[in-house]
Length: 360
Image 1 (cartoon, one colour):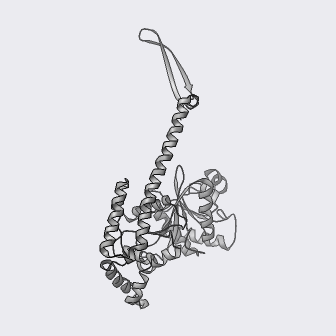
Image 2: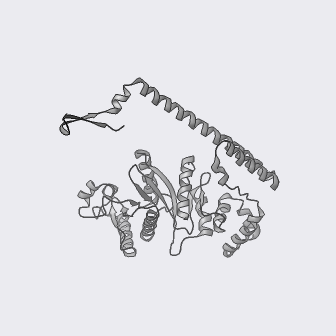
């Protein structure tokens, strides 16, 4: 709680200000010494806990109804399925979960959707000789089915991965959504949300050991992602060397990638190769990269390989308490985003919100 400044003014003569005394009071210390205040805070904490427990119980009840429905759905008629779905939504309304009404259940065996989906998948995979039978079998996989919903325009974006690997999310997207014109690869970036700013870390999910051309493409994709979320990109091409302080084949790749980025996007602020501390801290940059305008102000951090990227984002996330949202799959024609198999409900909500922004 902020300190309060109390001003006492004493008027000694009519209309004349003779003196002012300024007293700084630590109101937090004063309030904590009052038993009623402490009791009120304790009561509020207890009420908040009870409210959260009530909300969790409501969600758990609806989730149990939904899981029971999903386990039985295959054996139910279309009419019974619709009745059960309506019952779940109605119970959600009764419990105050009003936004459930915006949800749409899409059965994978709905022929009105499945028939055009099979035809489109056969068309897209014609060079691979896909038959209708093969397409129908493949569409029993939720990842392929969800991806085709995006292809056909039934959905604007896809969030997947809570029960699948990243490969199972990316593979169908590459096969049928495909990369944007001029893009050769897909990369995975995280939005790292700190208390006072947001940065982009990439590639933390897809490309194992990118060469210079691939690393440059990842950097350019990540700059686009930053702009999409209101971040004016300043790119740092990370390495164990800062502007030539170290030598080696790994440094050579980063320096060549930096050259390519500058060539393809001459107006994009970029520095490389650069160590993380010199990219992050103005104080360190003043010593290690003196005179460089980007060093110390980087907000798009491009790691040299998947190993360092994946370790890097997790280390920063766990040690600093930063919120990591992603991975955002970069380079695809339409938004498809991956979840960790350890994703929490809040992680899923954050990724859905991010996907919705990308789809605009």
